Image (cartoon, rainbow, N blue to C red; front, side, top):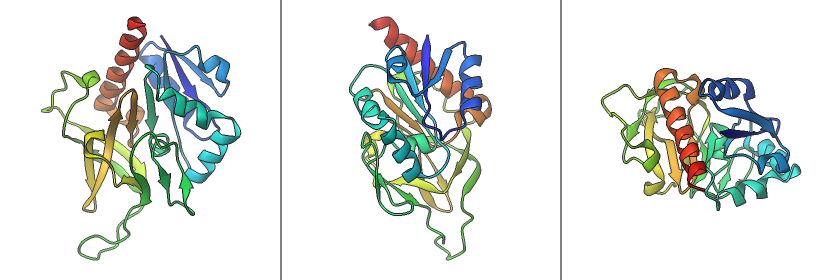
Length: 217
């Protein structure tokens, strides 16, 4: 099974690659659209600023390519900044249009909580996910197990659609969409490759979905 890690110059590619290799995937890190066309599923990583990432994707012609992927049967997973790029826009360093696959906007955490105490930004650390529903690829999830995952981010998705948010967390009293899903597109605000057993479990379930979709075609 072939997973294409979309390389636009802004992502922790090594850790993602190693996590997928441990799940016995063939991993191809590339920005070559011809090579990407041969993949069974796609992972969009990301570390850095939203405007820079969109500029890089546009320069490589990958922005339109990813939008088209959302209309296919092949699974797409965005991680951290990669998830944020799947939304409509971001106000990071000015307003920048995103890929528009999910409904919502990327905005910075409020710097003060409800008690007017200063909030540490970025949000960095372990938080549990609270699941509201389960997409088909997560069938069988045992909600009694620990759902702690590792977050590192200063911006979060807001004005989201309830039916697109699978699981959320909270930080300084703010609602944080952690796992989102729409058709074949999935987003994880946290880093599953750094999130211990539960992160590995979620990534393995997503990979299993890729295999299932491939076998159906």
